[in-house]
Image (cartoon, rainbow, N blue to C red; front, top):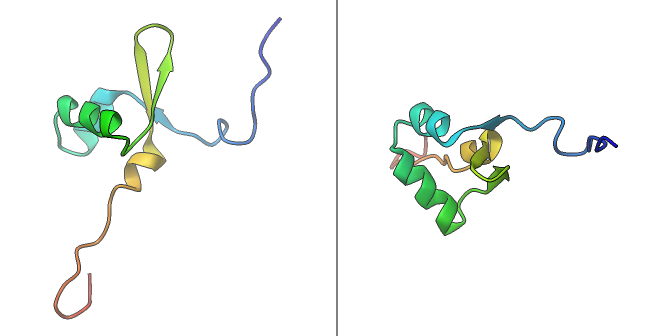
Length: 72
């Protein structure tokens, strides 16, 4: 019997590897693993070894730096 896909959040989720997230954000894989361990982002295990990350969740880590003039 095949599992039925969940349309709610999995259909629109863009999953990436730790290496892809690290490369896209110009950080080390170790930094990405620290983000997962500290709870900043959620890691999703696929099988015994594969870990995937939701790119939308990673992008939510970005926040503007306030400036004196108020324009970020």
